[in-house]
Image (cartoon, rainbow, N blue to C red; front, side):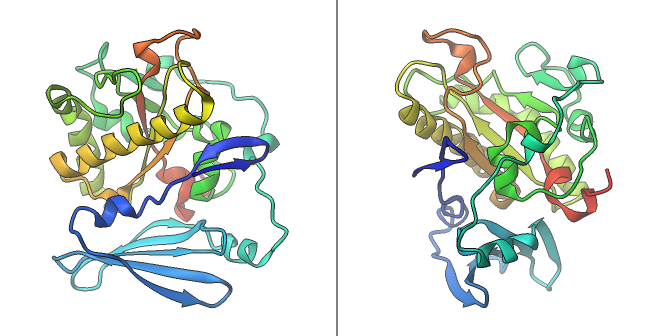
Length: 278
C-alpha cells in the first residue's frame, strides 16, 4: 500500500505475514483499550510473537515469548498509545529537529560493501554503537521513514545479492553469499535474542516512483525470507522497508546494478528503551 507521510510517498506492508506464512498458522487478534489491538502468532514449538498496535497500525510493542514464559522485548514505544488517542495526529520526521549529520568515524567503520570487503568481521561491525548520540527511543515507523534517524547506525550493503531489472527474486546461486552476514546476525542474537535488524530495499531509477517503492519493498522481504528460511534467523528480529529510487548509490537515471541493492542495519539502539542514554 502506498501512503503519503509528511508530503512523501512511502510503501507500507503487513510485516506479520512473513512470520506466519512459514508455519501456515493464522494469527489471533484481541481488541484492547485505547483503540489498540493485539496480534498473537503461535508457532508449533510454543513460541508466541505478540504485537500490539495503536489505531494507526503503528507498533507499540512487539515481544517474543518462548516456551517456559521467558519474554524478549523487540520494540517498545509506549508514547504511541497516547498518539493513538489523537484523531488529529500527523506524522512528522523526527530528523527535522536534528542538525546535519557529521560523520566522525572512518567510512569503513560506517559502511561495508560485501563484494569489496568479504573478509571483514561482520559480527564486530554489527556490534558497533551508533555513530552519534541517540536522543531518545524512536518508534519503528520513525526509524523506517526517517533517513536522518537511520543514518545514526552503520550499514552493510549486500551488493553480493544482485537483482535483475524489475525483479525481487534472489538467484539460488546468490543466496549462499548471505552466509557470513547471517552468521554474524545469529552471533549477535545468541548474545541478545531481542536485537533488531532493518533490511532496506532499493532500486535504480528505471520505472515509476510507485512501482519502484513496491519493488524495493519486495526485495527487502526476499532477503528477510532467505535469512529466516536458510539461516534460521527468527523473522520477528528482522523488519523490512523499501525506499525505491530515493537513495541512489550511483547517480544515474539509467539501469544500474549497484542501485538495485539491499542494506542491513542493526537498529536495536534506536528502538529499545535501554538505548536512550547512548
